[in-house]
Image (cartoon, rainbow, N blue to C red; front, side, top):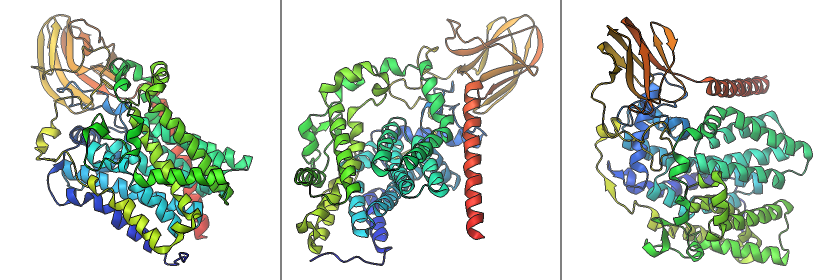
Length: 550
């Protein structure tokens, strides 16, 4: 019996949203915070980001109260999308814990909606789109990312990957301005979602262009839309890439990858009882039982040449090649590549690449519709229940819950990073304690009065009877400027006794000092580039809206 097409297209998205809420029931019915690998540092980052935003910093780059008040350029290198989302909830009056939870929930629901849109555009079939989405949502590693790792950056990369794929597919069919704008904005938000995962997903989308488009014009427009997305997000990725040399990241992450290659058999074995021997670094790395079955069915269909749709056939072959390459880079045999490619080492853990497998094996689920056995209605429904039901073990935080003192995270003293990714090289490393005073005299002597500060500006009056060298206990990074009586003066930041701190010299007398964070020339250029691209896209969008109304 074949499955009949249902004209009530809203039914599948409604069921999808309902099912996507199930993994969060356990965390939404408690005020406690789910204990995850990264969750606690995200609470501190949420607080730091919102504080900087509320004090007028945009784009947010400097976390002025972290690192024992010395500050650090955290958000110059750390993704923006999830913290913009959480800032909305903080603004609405929710606490850090609920902002974190809601960010996870929204990312998961949106990822389902976007994947369904992509699947529907790809297949023109509600049931096929639904199956693809179920496989994407309930891949075991997706749930590990949500409730074990708690990485809100990576989960938002999963959210916007299918939206970019949707946009590229639309362009391949009709290279319209509307489809161009959608793809450009989606690719920009993807890039802003996470450092490492957005890079591999962006590269994955680049390959999809050749899968979807057969016309040179459409290929060109597709790549241009991705390029515009790069321009729109350049205020973030360009400084993060080019100013990475000012951090300890390369030093501390140099050999991190060596201990994070999962045994290949663990990809194919279900870890329903959270067995330690099936984990790598505390992470379960299996593809999923039915995702593995989908791979087998695809291989069979390709071997028998039974795939009728040319586009689906190309997509299967591309996904298979990408999957094999991904597995290669997750195995010790690829150590030579990790050792010699510094960009690759920024991924830290090879098992992060399971995100690619999640997407490709979801595509492989379409293969079930090429087998008559799976076209039976009760088999289709059973498959859905089994894919969802076999992940129940991941629907709760396996590490338990924490009772959070949110005030501590609003005044978090540490850096929120693990491997020196944003620790500035001119310093001796992260601070160990708050300074006794925010300003002191390294040479000479004098008096400090009327001190005020926020994340991006310190203001005070100094009086000195002799020439003096002043220390503002703030970590230096390009963008800080010191103004003495409204005149910019040079900053010294390599004094051996005050490594990496802002120091400057003043003449005898009374002076008004302002230490101000702002954009250096390079970051200012990228800001202008992003703003220019945004204005152009807004103009195009308004034009299309007005044209449609007329």
